[in-house]
Length: 335
Image 1 (spheres, helix red, strand yellow):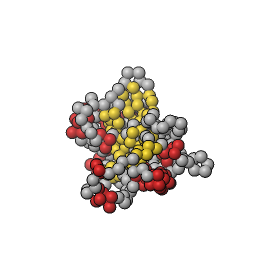
Image 2 (cartoon, rainbow, N blue to C red; image 1 turned 60 degrees about the vertical axis):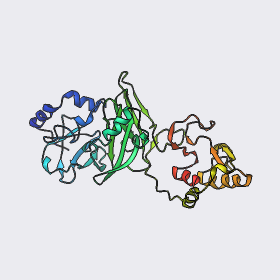
Image 3 (cartoon, rainbow, N blue to C red; image 1 turned 90 degrees about the horizontal axis):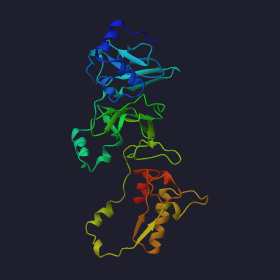
């Protein structure tokens, strides 16, 4: 077990922080966890503080520097050999079931969203905000992870929760980027297919709710409601000849006949289940060619909760519904 801290360490901690700071972190109600945790704060030259529930031991991996548990809490403090610790340090954690994991501390990474993007968003002029908000794969100083961002202007605290942190809102509270209402956090080590939501504490009522990401690029199939981390697409598009021909194509003087289609009710398999986008690509395109239509107009393919609807009750504008497969499957259909 970690040794208890000395009175000197405790006195140093409370020179910079208050008991209220620690209480708010442990109760998941602190609006600025970067002021308390990690090394992005004014006490980084004197100690590093970590909050790690259900942990028996925690150490800085590279130098095998131990941490000490603070006041019988879930806080761990390191005050030794600080000048030998890298900017982004790897932690080794032993949980209460003796499972050992290694992870980079999210609170060693500075906020990533540029001020210019925040300024444009505040003015309502950011036309590519979907590239900022949501969950996006990112590599910082050679360390791969996921940058999460969401807009929650009436929140006093927002956390990323998921199957990578036991859906525990205490583990990954986000950084508030000021009065624009945007919150962000880079979590290293996360990969595609992991599930997540945002846990939001209301500033006025203090109610805590878990919300799917409105900018998610993938969502679970109903009735499950979590958002899904997705890597950037590597789909090999096969439309180079079509793109080349389009440059000299006189579309204004060509026939136009549009077939409007709802994929879920157009055709199903022998068991009555939905077809995959790849199956639909061949069945539907062959049918369209045979019947003489020139274009296909799809009813909404964005994610929605009710199979009986045509998709207009959208829950994710940036996620093709998983009823018919993955985003790569949908790209195949378009291709």
